[in-house]
View 1 (cartoon, rainbow, N blue to C red):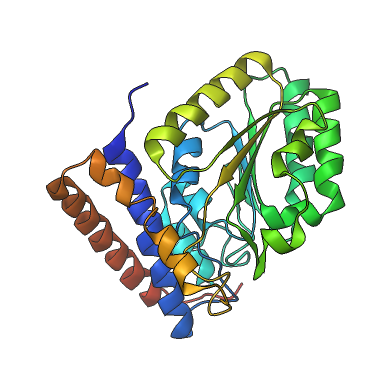
View 2: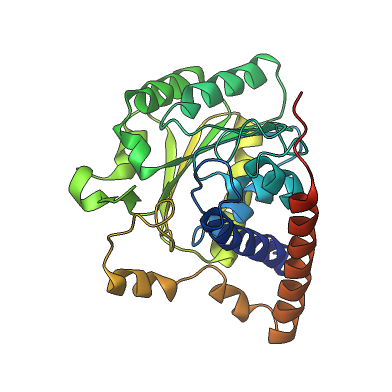
Length: 295
């Protein structure tokens, strides 16, 4: 499978620049509500969502910006939304966590999106469409009963639901070592759902992997559970970070952006990064200058 490294890097660096700038804007008091960045996990979103069609459906969680940008490639609507502007994806009413646009849905309630994704996947099966539904959850979501209820029904009904669990090692500030017994993947396997586990941030591995999974799902219409062991480099939200610095430094060496150096020249990387940053600065200026109109 040919991998479009330039396009994937463009999406990855867009997410990285966007998210890091959000933290600065939050400190400046420019955002409405809180924000949870996706820094360090970019490879999962771009590798999976790049294989989707516009008719496919994506459900995300409180850490949703990376998934939204990977699908919509529209930082302008997302920034405006998080800044509470009328020009935002949801008219400035959804904020950072609650987005609903073009078959993309996110919600900040842990586990709350899984039943919704299940229902949407059942609807696609009922319509006999070739579409699939992808839902992104985290390791912390495994503490919710609705997660297991949804897996049970997904297996029983054999719906086209791809559950992507991004295990970034922490549920807010609690390590998986302190709150999860047994193996994560066994939870899905116990319901008879086809499952797979990887530990990588390398798009050269993740992109073809998700390509095969999604292609097979379109053929058999059955659920699949993909566990990706990754890591978030930034704090849970803004400054609530109690992790060991050595641990963070270890994972920084496995930064998703680093792997692109094996496939793109330094000149290509610099050119793409410069163009993306320029575009984001223009979008930010335009968004800041837009006045909020109350209706």
